[in-house]
Amino acid sequence: MPRVYTNRRAHYEYELLERFEAGISLTGSEVKSVRAGGVDFRDAFARLSNGNVDLEGLYIPTYHEATYNNHEPRRKRRLLLHREEIAKLKRGLEQKGLTLVPTRLYEKGHYFKVEIALARGKQLHDKRRAEAEKTVRRELRNL
Image (cartoon, rainbow, N blue to C red; front, side, top):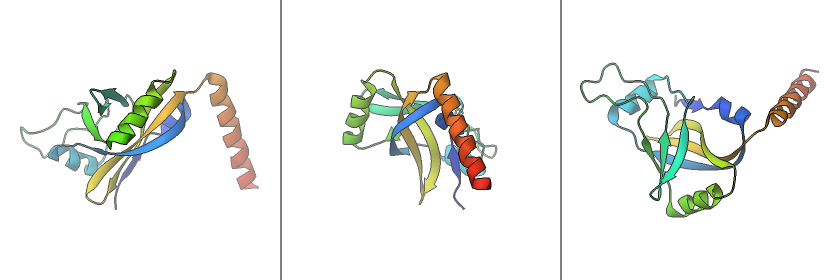
């Protein structure tokens, strides 16, 4: 059963405008560790640098069975996107207040994919409004 890790905090903190699916460059011990579980999105963000998109701050714990080839848990990882998608992200990031946020990490076939979103930070009143709407939907569903 393929695992799906979601960044639930991203939906609360950000208004997600546009989503992109990207491949992620992982080492062997990282792949085994992701399959074993324990991925943490807490400080994760994506950054555009030198025409590439890098994912920083994603915590993948070290794999206990690995030898000296084990990986650094919070290392910078390259995201694999098409040139047109990177250009679209670059245009989006030039707008004031937009950022790249990882929302999901999942297995697709033999590969791991990361869903990143072009996002705008929510204000406190936006968070309250979203929470109130969610509560109303929950109450209507329970009736």
